[in-house]
Length: 186
Image (cartoon, rainbow, N blue to C red; front, side, top):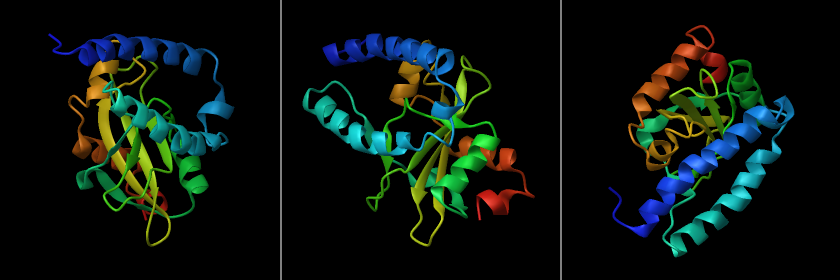
C-alpha cells in the first residue's frame, strides 16, 4: 500500500499524533488555550513550523508548511487579527494547532489558523486561515477537510485527501450569514 519508508512512517505517525493531540486539546486545554486569548499560538506556529518543515524536507519525512491556492480565498474581513479571531470564536471556531503553516504566492505567511468541527471526533472540519490584507484588515481563506484530530482521518487530513475549497467558502458564508457578512468578510 505504501511505497516508501517515509510513507510508512507518516501512516503510523499521523494517527498517533492525532490521538495525543485529541487527548491534550479536548481533555486538558481550556478556552484560554483554544480561544482568542491564546494569541501566542500565532507567533509560536510562525516560529516553529518553518524549522520543522526544513527538518522534515531535509529528511524526506513530510512537510509542515505549504502555499494556498487562490480558490481558497473567501474575502477580506474588516478589523484586526484580534477582532476577526474573536468573531470566529463566537461562531464556535477554535485555534487549529495541527495545521501546516500556510503562505500565499506573494510570500505573506498565515497569521491565524482556526477550525470548526461538530465535535472532537467529527469526520470533517472547516479550516479558516487568516492573512494580513494588503489593503488593511484580514484576508480570509477556507477549506473543508478531514478532521486532523480524528485518528482515523488524520492521514487523509495530512495528505489533503478530499480537501474542498469551494465547500469551505460556502460553509463559512453560511455560518456568518448574509446579514453579518459585512462584519466578518467586509
